[in-house]
Length: 337
Image (cartoon, rainbow, N blue to C red; front, side, top):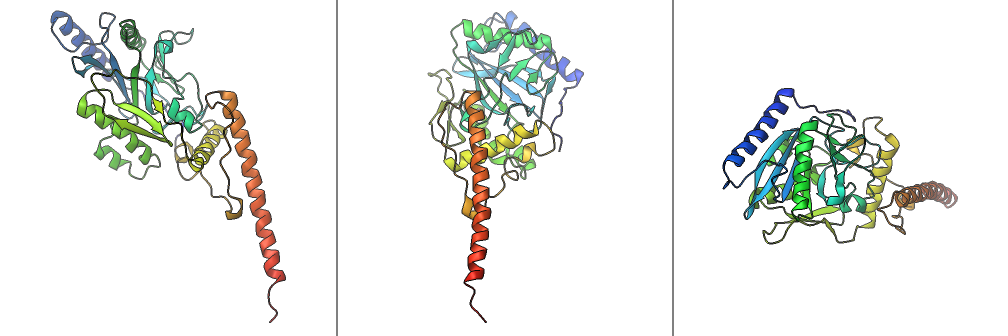
């Protein structure tokens, strides 16, 4: 399995997407009463962004009255990794899930000016001990964990988000999917380790398709919880119930540690949801390490990873010693024949 690959949209597709956006903007400028507009500095309506990895497509939706309408579609030049969520810093994997932009995430740097910081890890990712920093939507047409657009498209997208914030919008939802999660597409990936996670993402996809409103999304016990949006309530941040089952956290921690140690090497990044979680000896069951610090900090996550490793070594040692003791006891008490 390839752990690092770039999906580059054909030049013709990029030109077509740019032409569609330009044409929609021109039509809107000629029709003051239109309810849909391509993102531009003149358009300040709240927006929602959707990304589909497999299709290499970014959609921009804008509020028009009591619902959202499609304003523009842009081809994604490149994204890195494979289908599946990002787990660890350095795995060179583009994320999947429900993210939120705020004004503080309008990112400017020498390398990627006028880019958008997705805010990875979000509350859901942090609850599962996932790590990573500066996952962006940016220009330049090259990616090592981000979503790369052409510079022209990125300027248009950045202006649309900045204009929405200037008009009073506080949160811009960004929904990132592996592909359009229709039943047919999910069936194509029925054997994939991340299928249960993708079915969670489908709930958010279906809600927006049904209502044309940003859904209300929360995270609880390692899964996304989705409710239909309300036109009277603007989109807000991802809420967190604050609970994760200790055993689930143990499994998630193993996934993150395994991904971090690979650093893009090998071929098991997308098997981490299942096969990479090795069983422990029955007498040395690994308890989840108690979280005693803020998992939002990199130093805390490193501390918990080291603590998890120590617990695992102790459990394995206990398991081996226990088996030896049981064998010795069985031989000692074995009845004479």
